[in-house]
Length: 202
Image 1 (tube, one colour):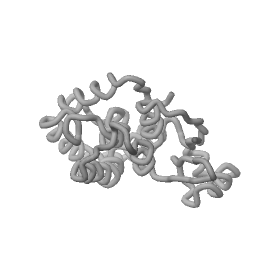
Image 2: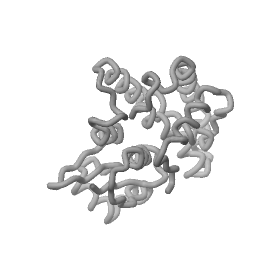
Image 3: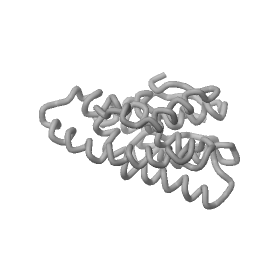
Image 4: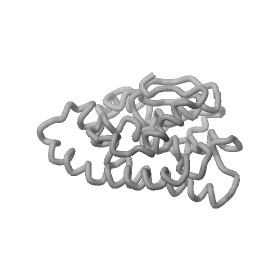
């Protein structure tokens, strides 16, 4: 299996972390997001494999391509401890993953991108400030759930946690104060104590 991704991207990190937790073998193909945005040679090579022209995606045997980070980690986790067997718990897991894509990532990941990777350009400062309201709302929702259960779907680690962990644990890089959320901090420590855990950016 080949994984095409940027090591500093949370969406790409989800896949790498899942592979390590499952002790799955892979080849990593480093593709920087900034290079794809230039739409140069690399972009057109990538688009032959993934018409969406984005990362991450994985390439399996027989040139089978799978895109979208949450779909990929669920595929990789099929029939493993990271994916529940109960259909209601699977629905809950997907509920959190949709939450991540629509109510969490657009605020926390974008704020991180503006501050950490763009170095806070003047023309995006207002946008950056507005993103914090949505980001803190998402963190508060997670905090409430994690006050009731050790993980987002009950008391077992699942791909829902991996989906939300990717950008939550680096939310401070987007100006979010995680010290306000004791349950999230404990949840982060639980995930980081997992065997084969790997840090982002490696």
